[in-house]
Every structure is written in structure tokens, then in C-alpha cells.
Image 1 (cartoon, rainbow, N blue to C red):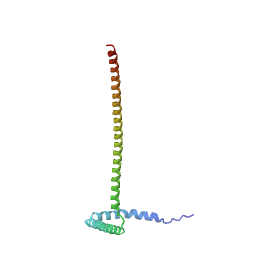
Image 2: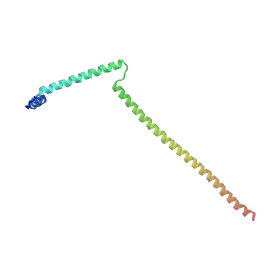
Image 3: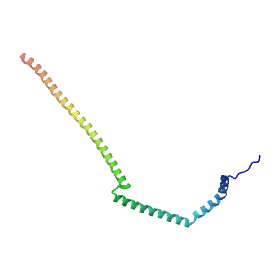
Image 4: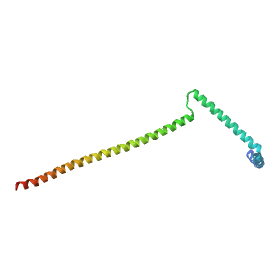
Length: 141
């Protein structure tokens, strides 16, 4: 039996890649070091920036005509809502603290009233006791 050898396209491609890769890498590296490459890349970036700004402006004017908010307007609104939520939370905290303080003040006032009432009763008891002590002393005379 004879074995025939078929050409494998992947092996051919791999060999070609290995032989040309270093050469192309050197050529590309050299061209990237040149001033003209930097200038061309800078010009490409400037063109891209101009196109992006133009498209952004056109999109914004289109959205305004349709009365649809832009991304910046929605982001601004979201910031306002978040700030409002924080203020509401602060108000809730302040109200809760005030209610606790108000309840504490009511409790303190109630305790003061109770103590005053007890003082009055104690004064009445002391007065009654002194009156009892004075009465027998007066009867004996």
C-alpha cells in the first residue's frame, strides 16, 4: 500500500505566515515611527471628532424638534431626582427626631406635673400632720 501525501492548506498557510510575519512587522514598525504616520493618524482623529460632533448636533436638533429629551437632559433630571430624594430623606429624619424630641418633652412635662402634684399632696400631708400636733397641744392648755 502506498500512502499518498496530500497538501494541507493550513500547513501551507502557517508556513507562509511564519515567513512573512517578521518582515511585515518590521515594515509596519518603521512606518509607525515616521512623522507622516503620526500626522495622518492625527488628521484621522480630527476628522472623526468633527463627524461625531456634527452627528451629535444633528441628533440633538432632531430630538428637540420631536420634543424628546436628550441624554444630557435625562441625566440632569436624574441628578435632580436623586438630590430631591436625599432632601426628602433628610426631612424624614428631621421629622422623626422632632417627634422623638417632642414626645420626650411631653414625657418630661408630664413628669414635672406629677412631681408638682406630689409636692402639693406632700405639703398637704405635712400641713395636716403639723395641725394634728398643734391641736392636742392647744387642748391641754
